[in-house]
Length: 101
Image (cartoon, rainbow, N blue to C red; front, side, top):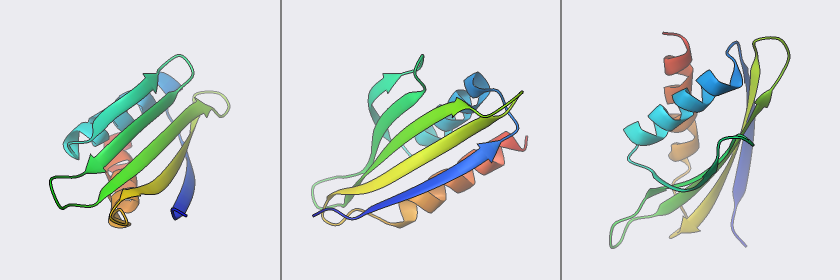
């Protein structure tokens, strides 16, 4: 059974702006976006890989959380070779830095 971790954060940004921050953070990590439905605020991406590298999956859900605020729910799951637990923290740190600029 694959290990999973979930984190939820609230940001003082509208959902469309938070989607942009998340896509930028995924791009910085050289993630591969496998599925996205921007109207529903969902993004599924994988990070890592190579011939012998671990692969992690990030499933994002962005939704409104009041006036001018958004909720980001991120599910991390190991996809191959145990994944990399540091990916979830690195992604959230990148999103945090992007939302403060």
